[in-house]
Image (cartoon, rainbow, N blue to C red; front, side, top):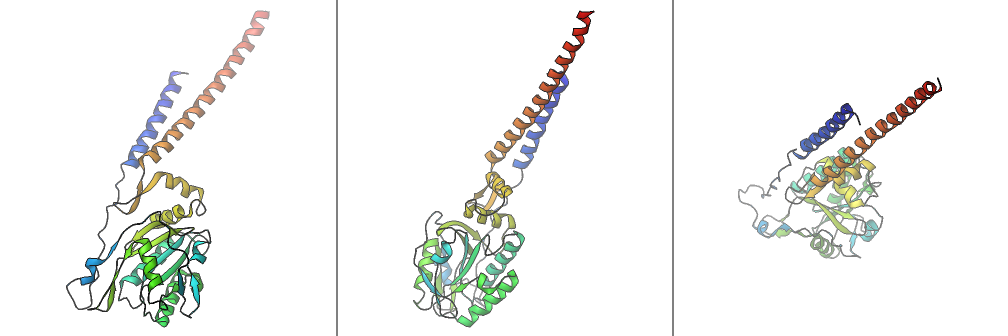
Length: 299
């Protein structure tokens, strides 16, 4: 290999290493502290807040045969959603919630739009009320508002109640995903965290989405990861090899070894291509020299 070619190859490898260093040095988002809810007119947090929490149960399966009712009174089953071979976005809340539940739903709608995922095609969604005395009309009104905001028919984002069993099914689902909530007698409200859940096909707890605003990238990655390769593009799969969920920041962060693998592959293919070109040129020059030497010997 000529000296110029050697310098070019070394320079190419160095450039790729610099790119990797820049990518790996990118700042990782810090964990944001979740807001606490306060009853109207009070400066003190709800007493029930002491008993609420989210205990992540990643990899666990939610109970089968959980039955709910839709606002019209029709019996529905969670199994019908988890059996459709698509990720399921689940929210647990109630519809007379003064603010937090609506903010969670609105944040999910925004993330769904910005992630370019299609509800019903890439991911399913369901809202389950934790209020055993939920008002069906209020649930319908919220469902229509959220569906209109998401640009889908209300049936595409079902809202279910657990009123027939005094909230037992909702409580069983909440326990399965580690969602601890409590009714506060003083404020007549439910105390709970702002969180949504992503179930993988079969009802496996795959990811937790915290807060009321969700990064479109994190939302899409959570759904694609829960889909197990059935959702998203090839580029999404490459991203998942470079980004891993960080339980500390509760976000997807750059994965060092993922970038190193890709960087090493790029260096390998670049050098292999360069060596192939130089090898072919060397063969061509050798043939040319032999062709030139032939007539000389004949003379």
